[in-house]
Image (tube, rainbow over all chains, first blue to last red; front, side, top):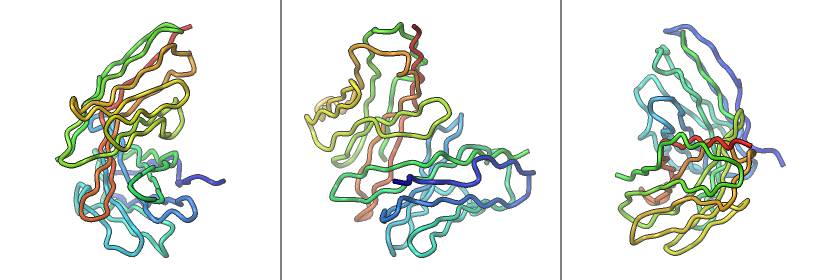
Amino acid sequence: GAGVSQSPSNKVTEKGKDVELRCDPISGHTALYWYRQSLGQGLEFLIYFQGNSAPDKSGLPSDRFSAERTGGSVSTLTIQRTQQEDSAVYLCASSLLAGGINEQFFGPGTRLTVL
Amino acid sequence: GNSVTQMEGPVTLSEEAFLTINCTYTATGYPSLFWYVQYPGEGLQLLLKATKADDKGSNKGFEATYRKETTSFHLEKGSVQVSDSAVYFCALSEEWGGSNYKLTFGKGTLLTVNP
């Protein structure tokens, strides 16, 4: 079956511009996560959506970052007024949250380069 | 807070050598533990998992045992292959906020296996 998909796969932008990154989770998965992978910081949690509950935004690095999930499926991560330190690979994951086992399935990522 | 510390590497081995990548964790509760692998040019994939103390996760010849007394989850393989060359991430998942299962990752270990 289809896995987690993300678009675009690569994005190059100029400092100060806004960008939107998209994630399509596995059908039926109720939980969706965004992570950021950068050379200096490794893999960092950004935000988590679970069903209709309020998202956990505790990992967002600044108020320039926001995310939404429409209809419990597709999610968009928006970065406003991008800075060079935002350059990283942004990963999306989804999971069923069956029982106590949190097996997350990851998308291929969006590589963001801020010039 | 939760944290994961893993052997940083890089690790370079010859084919058929024995592999150990050390991983220790700090968590306030009873986490589930995971090893994820990222092959060159590909996304993160779950390699194996363990959900409680003394559980052994295994897959593709890799094994890791959940050791609560030493808070460790070391990855081992008896005979590595060139195709095992990848970055390996140790991670934990712990419930907090009632139903939140974000992953906390180690920094990753780059493994290169030479023929």
